[in-house]
Image 1 (tube, rainbow, N blue to C red):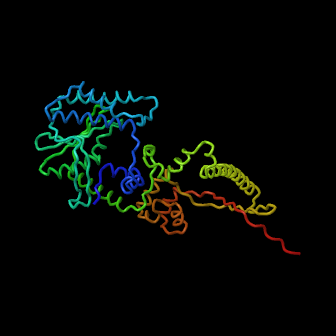
Image 2: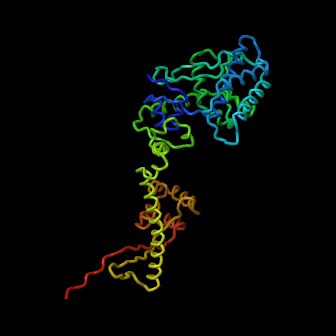
Image 3: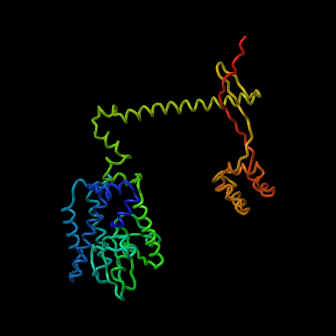
Amino acid sequence: MPVYSHSQLSVYEQCPLKYKFRYLDKIRREEGQGIEAFVGDMVHKTLKKCYDDVKLTRVNKLDELRRFYDNLWHKNWNDEIAITKKDLTPEHYMAHGRRMLEDYHRRYVPFDQDKTVGTEMLISFSLDGKDKYRLRGYIDRLSSAGNNSLEIHDYKTGAHLPTQEEADGDRQLGLYQIGVQNRWPAIKSIRLVWHYMAFDAELVSSRSGESISCLVAETMRLIDEIEATEDFLPQESNLCEWCEYPDLCPVRKHSCIVEALPANEYLSETGVALINKYVELKAKADEIGCEIGELKDAIIEYARREGLSVIEGSCRNVRVKFDMKLKFPGKKEDGREELEEIIRKAGKWMEVSDINTAALTHVIEDGEWNGDLVGKVMEYGAMEETVAVYLSKMKEEDPE
């Protein structure tokens, strides 16, 4: 049976096609690493060292953690790590990571608020007890807080500080709680703790039995959806720039092809040539469309002024049909909400579901509703002129 993780589920939600490439086709590639992820990795490793040492009764001084972090940074840094903000340097980000560690050290030293059970701890568990829905993940730090309770700690180094509501709905640590509870069923309480290090802030959440049940049901539904999916379609987002499969993705594949071409071959590439020609013709079509619209308006005005329904040309006629059509306010127009309320109270909503204005016009014009309801509805209706203009063949002259 497959084993899922929160990150794996998130990849599917982000882009089903990327999920297919990575987890089903097992196409393994080095995913481009951004500077933000690199900073997070260095900070996580430093905090692991900090708490592993505390388990052995050694409390690191701030200067020791700084040196460890700096050495770790220089050892792992490479020029392939992407920095999108061009006005910032690696040194800016290195200092940012160091400052987060300094704030954390000041807040928690001598790290005796709890007892660490494990760091970077693998947790594997089943959602249904039958191993059909298996998950696993790594807990940044699991600690014992006394009174038969445990805490699941997660370090966040990103620039987003969520609300308490968002923390209470976080899937990752909620799933970890299920795993911890399965492993230690005698534990009475589990707290979820996020350390938002860029803000020197801590968020805490506790999940009720009901919320855990909902999380289990939602996660099993998502896994069922994944396993039932046949067409893993691409889903575009701002994360596409970091995807490791651009040359396989139908959205970005052509861009990869043309980027590799010499400048003198670019314009002659089949796709580029086709699209350039299409753009050229579409621009002409739009220009012609504007001219046709203006001409149509002139024809209507001429027919209205002269009282005509047929205007003769040298080879074709134009017919102009003036009519009056009942119209009701569309979505987001004034009166729409009041109109909907009248129809709902009358028990007629399903007949014009979501107020399909064509359906509403039909039932009114065909007399399908009683007069009282029609009167109320018609307060929001109005007769609106419609004009149709279409070509017709000229009548052939009788032979002499």
